[in-house]
Length: 385
Image (cartoon, helix red, strand yellow):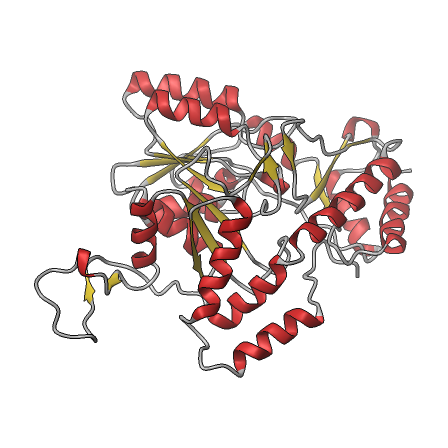
């Protein structure tokens, strides 16, 4: 089976983890800060906060943005459920904005129209979470212009997108947002096994995020009440969580960062090769906006079903039957049974639903050989013929 995604672990990565295992620190040690600094420097952001996974990162980013009961978070329906769940974790409500039919990212025109209606109804969102689907940035300048007009905060869900850029700036620079979140799951661009990170340029958010990932505890005298009891003293000043990353994970992440550009370049080479090999088939291939450089976490094709005798499901299952580990990103979140209880139903976000009925994610990862890629293409051609 050729998987749709896979980590790439080198000898240097293993050595970095072994070195940490043999050190005095396994958690909350110097490897965390090294990894945070490496990512912040790469992206051009002032601050970075490493956590145990990207869902935790989204959760505390929403808390830091002030979401609470009575507030609403808007995001894309074409995403993993965590992009929406993070608003519910904070006691808020969630709504969605349909996707652009070319990029599969949040549609700017749909967002603008929805904001205009919400403004008249007095129901504007507290936070909008644009999702950089497959590694391609949303139109962040347009989103931040709307945020200034309508008064919402922006948290970038950049789980797919480390190593990508928008208008010449690295995704994660937070030039157009309060915070940006990365994922380091094994199928992502770089990995820490499990892990996530929040980037920001605001010192107040940075300090709050640091507390929220570690029980709401501080040792900083600026935030403490009364006088210190001694060098051991700490205070819990808010309700936080145990969302810390270990030094073992951070050591792997810092090592992986040294190959980030190499990983993204290889993904681009494979994506370009797919574009050449698949262009004659009845497929819609990924389109890249000229303002963006995707990190190509995913390579998603759409079946032109009006030109095929087979259904979406038949093509998917036949590819799996040929040991091609295709996947589908994503089932629209509003169609999940849990979200239907809030009143969402089929037809609410037609572009996302149409996309879901046609999309298939093909294998794409740095270790994918050209011969294996040829096998994927050959299977697809045979099934579609």
